[in-house]
Structures are given as structure tokens and as C-alpha cells.
Image 1 (cartoon, helix red, strand yellow):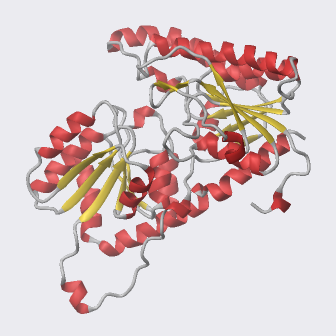
Image 2 (cartoon, one colour; image 1 turned 135 degrees about the vertical axis):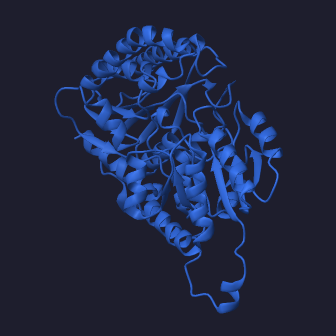
Image 3 (cartoon, one colour; image 1 turned 90 degrees about the vertical axis):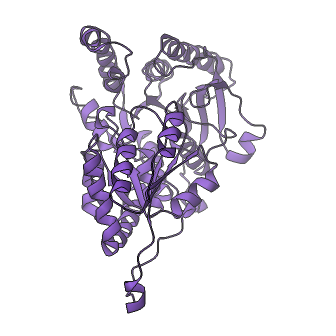
Length: 428
């Protein structure tokens, strides 16, 4: 970063998020690591408050030695109880531990002079407990409070309740009604609101009175990880006459029930029965990984499903670059708007085949970056993949459209410095 870009007024900034991987946990930076790195590079004193229990790895964590020298920011761990189930009373208890521990540790650190009073506190939602504690701290310490909306919480929690439908209908209004009131209260206290998608901002702020500064920064991707896809070029007659290679598709992400993976497997069976030569790669891990491996092995014929498991970052990027199509196979009831996988696919120049209506579908349409299909409908997915398999000119055009989408909306080298400048403006 050009030193001329540094803010003339360095700020003390606290980032509150218990979920994202921290340095040393094996993955590339996600949202909050990226933001902390950018803010530190701009000359700010940045402290990231996180839990001492890794949400992804389900293991206790500690920052690597020499973290500040390497990254330029500090990490503070808040002790919480461990949990293994993403939908469990222990997880809710862990969230309460995080809020209470954050408030206690931060208050003590400032009172003792160990930490400087923060100018800005940015707290992610979910969980609710982080922004609630941050709001109390901001009031006590005369800090600017920014709430970062990472999800539609608690709406997404409703579908995860491990209850029969009739009981969920009874419990949800009581449980979620209280959580929605808490969300509205903390957003009313916020001086500004940032969000990972416009959808999250619009829906979460719909019942919050008054206006407040709002900024949208998509999760994004590092475009430099992926070489640009090949440009379209006229084909000579011999090349045009040769059969095209198998269409290569990829699904990347957590292998859980909120993904539309049953539809992907069913579509693969239909494609193979029709004689279509298509390769479908699945990268990631989760509770349904074993079932996917069994189902993939049972598909006969020319369409193949290959389950890779969790890949290291270099192998992950290499896999995406070897494919033609990225599958955003996510069930709309998850209420996810623009997932990480969509950003990575676009950064790798893959044509997107997408099941999510709304914001992502509109972006794909605007940039002519792919096709939609209907979640839960294997024949709809078959039609979309068959179009790309048969029409390689359209495939190439959509791959270029995906690159335009990534450059316009998902390039972290551009979007996160904009996010940082907006945060600086919040400090006046």
C-alpha cells in the first residue's frame, strides 16, 4: 500500500468477531482478518477480539507468535465454553460467555492503561452478544459503534432449530421474537452499519427507526490468486470439428444440509443417463461428506462426481482454475445472499450456475456471468449445465462476465480499502 494513502489521524480500532479464522489456522484471510490487515496497513492501532474456541475447527486456539510483527494488529482471546454442535445450547452459552468476557476484559484493559480507549468499535452480528457488549463499551468509553451485518440473524437460526415442524411453529415466535427485538435495539444504538450484502442491510434495518450511515462490502476474494480465464478466439475448422472436452464444474464450501447437494447428485445421475460427459468436483468437508462419497461412487456412465474433501488453499485455487463452471448450489431458505464461494468462482473466472434468488442473481444477470437454476429441481440444474456443455461460446462469454463481476464487486484489493476509509469517516 502506498504510504501516501495512510490516514493523517491514526485511530484505535477494535474489531469484535468470534467466528472467522485467525492467522495460523490454515486458511487464507476471510473478512475480518482482511479488514484488520488493511486498517493496520493504513496506520491504525487495531485489536481483534475473538473467542478462544474456533467455530470452524471446534478446537481451542491461540494466536501465532510474532503475530503483531507479521500482521501489524493484535488479537485478544476471550475465554468461552467449547461446543461441537452449530445448533446447540452449548453454542448459545458460548456466545453469552463471549459477550460477558469481552466486556469484562476490555473494561479492565482500558482502566489499567494496558489498552488505549478505542475510537471505533466494529462488532459483527451474529452473534448478538458481541454487538450488545460492544454497545455498552462504546457508551462507557465514548467510542463510535459500528455493527457489521454478516447474516440475517436470527432469521437463519429458525431453520436450524432441531424441532419437528409443529413445535418449531410454537417456539420460533417466542425465541426469535426476543432475538429480533435485541437486534433492533443494538442497531438503534449503532452510529453506523456495515454489511456483507445489501440484502442483509435492507432487511435488518427495515424496522429500525431513523437513518444512519451504511456501507456494503461484499465478502470478496483475492483476484491475484487466480489467473485470468482464456479469452475467446476464433477457432479453425479442425478445432471446431473436434468434440469439446468434458465440461468441468466445481462446488466448494461446507458440506452441510443447507447446501443443495442432493440436487447436484440427482442432476449428475440424469446427465450420466443422458450420455452427457460432465465432471463435477466437490471440495470441502462437513457432515454430509461421507454420504456424498458413497453417492458419487454409485453414479455410472460418462458424468463423474469427484469428492476431494477439504483442500489446502493452493490446491483449492488450482482446482477452481481447472474448471469451467462454479456451482452456487445453496438452498434459498438458508437466507444466504452472496456466499464466499460465489466470490471465489467469479475471481477464478468461472461461469456461475446459481440457485439463490435476489442479490446474487441480479449481479450475475447484470454482468452476464452465468445462469440460474431452481434449488431442489435436478432437471433445472441439468438444463443449465447442458446449455454450457453444448454452447462453449456462451460459456466463454459468461466466464468473461464473471471476471467483470469480480473486478467490479468482489476485488478485496479495492473493496476493503474502501471499507476502511468509510470506517475512518465514522470517527469524524
